[in-house]
Every structure is written in C-alpha cells, then in structure tokens.
Length: 127
Image 1: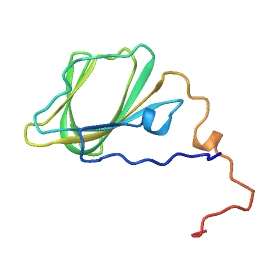
Image 2: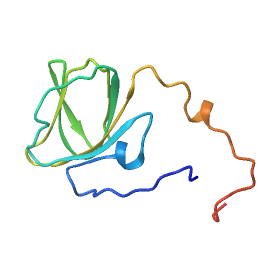
Image 3: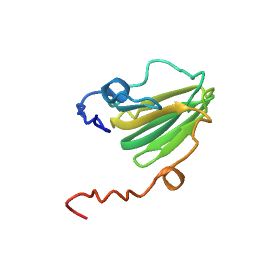
Image 4: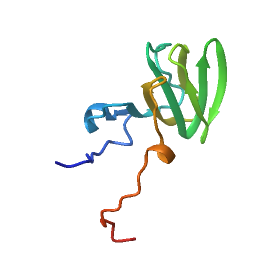
C-alpha cells in the first residue's frame, strides 16, 4: 500500500481544497485566489480549528475581531478558532494564499521531534 498520494490542482482556479483530494486526516489545506477587489462573502469563525494563512502573491486586507489589517506577499498569520475573520483582495491586486486548518491544541510533534532519519538504505537518486 502506498504511503503517499500525489494529486494536482488548478493553480489558476479560485479555490482548491486538498482534504478530499489527498485524503487528509489531520488538517484541511486550501489554495485560494481572490480576484482584485473580491472578498470572502462572509465573516466566520470555527468551533475547533485554528487557521494558518500564507500570502503567496498580491495584497489585501484581513478583518479580524473588528480590526482591519493590511496584507502583502510573504505575510503569514495564525487565527484562533474563535477569531472572527474575513479576507479581501486589494482593488488593484488579486491575492493568492494558502490556508491550513487543524484542530487547535492537537499538535504533539513537529519536524524536529517527530521526524526520524530513515535507516533502511532507501534513498533518492540525488543523494
């Protein structure tokens, strides 16, 4: 049984969700594009999931708990589940971003504490 799943999404589309596409079990990941001047059409929060955003391209605004904050390429931010949020692209710029959702407080390990260097002798052609 394969220990991975490879898929493809249309990076020129407005939204691609990876949960079903990759059979994710611990997070939801979406690749998003808001056209210039467009906004997520609602303010929302979550019951359990925190969200992490990475702005890949463009600029816009983040509405969070009554504040409006400017966003630009390279910005990244995390929002608690209860944070009331909405995103908008600038009038003169589309905004591309990745959003990752995971249950708040569920992280038990990360790269430095969860990764194990493989000793099976298996390696890619470039090593």
